[in-house]
Image (tube, rainbow, N blue to C red):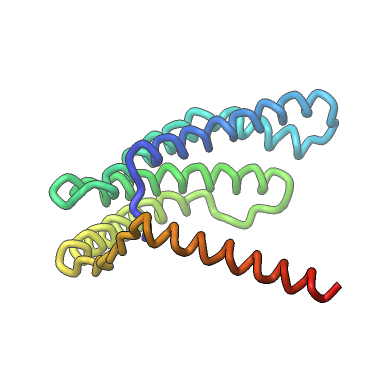
Length: 176
């Protein structure tokens, strides 16, 4: 897995959220011209969930930052991941409610109270297992053997490529 810097994590998450906000703004404008109850309900749901999505983004940034730092400082990463999974589950259940408004009820309302604690502890346990595996079994780092190229070698290759091009050009002229 590629290591990301903290700045790239924050920048990519904020850009993603701003992109979503722009698309939501366009959907709100399009809602004035599109007379569809399903589209209106989806846009209303996303408008009412913007604070939840902002919280998911902030907790997600904190989670990604904690996973990006070294061992003693990333001890809270599984807890933040578990908390973010609950927020994400709440958002997904909101989407399911919007779908159920226009179709049949396919999910009992008490399911959230059953799934949430199980999901929290499963994410927490797997997070700490991942953390322990990272500490006990560090990933093998490939040794980068950088060959230092000298300017003389570059000049020699450049000279030979020019010479080769001139020979080919002379052959081409002799054929005519």
